[in-house]
Image (tube, rainbow, N blue to C red; front, side, top):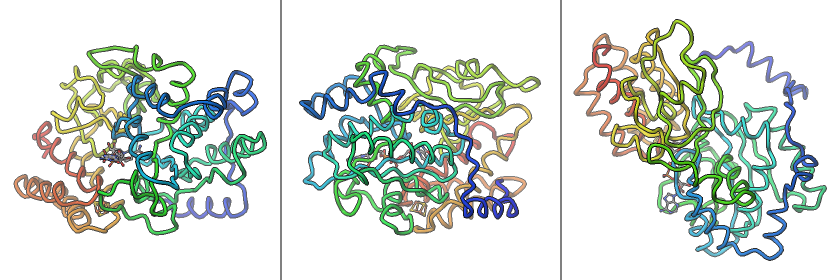
Length: 406
Ligand code: NAI
Ligand code: SF4
């Protein structure tokens, strides 16, 4: 369970109030460096005499799907947003709250302009009046980099002053749910909205809004600069494209690994330097706690969009956490449900009460499986948003694959 060290929190708060964030700014690609290697040529050419449908066609050809985790086809989304009368907005989801996910941070701390150019290309494509970047406050270096580089874009005359607004999230996981994020940007409490209408129709300030994740925009630049081949030529295990796997847990070298989308857990552990010494591979979280836990025996399935659904899981943002013989699957599932209990916005009963009840039931020596299953059905069927709908996954998967522990 995540412990809150109040003394440290107070110290950090005081430091921030005094203006000392002590963010270590990594050696990233600045505006000048990026521009000198052909950066922003794609954007300027498009603004000059490009047609948004041509870029949409390139994106569709590349196979790019939303990399926040849901994998919605990015080109199709542009069409939905364009289909509604303006003014339109673009909102970047940079909340990256999924436990185990750190790929957006990885790219922003290295090549922020690949993201920023992609954002401006997408904004051009849907004729967005303004761009909002919603960024988690726990990434001080990223916030500082973005502040500096947005100023550089304004200075270079690439965007009018104030066209890009940087907003800081305040640590609520639910504010990464796109409609809750929009509520938060509007200055309200982050409560997910009912769908439909989708944010492509009724989004920020009631207007059609294009919401993209940070990494999705990074790839939009690369597709415009390098062609759709940058994604659609990699084939493995019948899957096409690349995935940025955030790998952590009991591996020798945790980190972000860009691998073929057809990679299995075996490939991913190998890329991360193998298991930590003295640890035997036991289980893995394929994509955030809502994807639950799979056993080591399921090791030949590509970890990609659509491939894990038949197993009751999904790839999500590709946050792979590797567990070993020294970990308890049951304890991991309980930890996941405690996380959901803490982060539930409380708006709907099946999730608010369901998470709390699940945590209680999972603390018993022996799990009341029929009762837990009944609870899982109610939560999955009746919760408003993905948090409550997917919260049962860890419970079901642990009952299925680690029954001896529960
Ligand atoms: P979703 O599949 O409902 O929607 C995905 C996107 O497609 C949204 O932008 C939605 O507005 C759009 N969309 C879907 N159907 C549409 C339609 N008919 N018309 C117009 N637009 C449409 O998935 P959701 O709930 O937005 O995201 C769930 C995913 O988020 C999970 O897979 C989870 O892995 C991931 N996630 C990622 C986190 C991170 O830190 N990256 C944190 C928590 C969850
Ligand atoms: Fe809030 Fe949970 Fe309901 Fe989502 S499912 S709206 S997080 S209470």
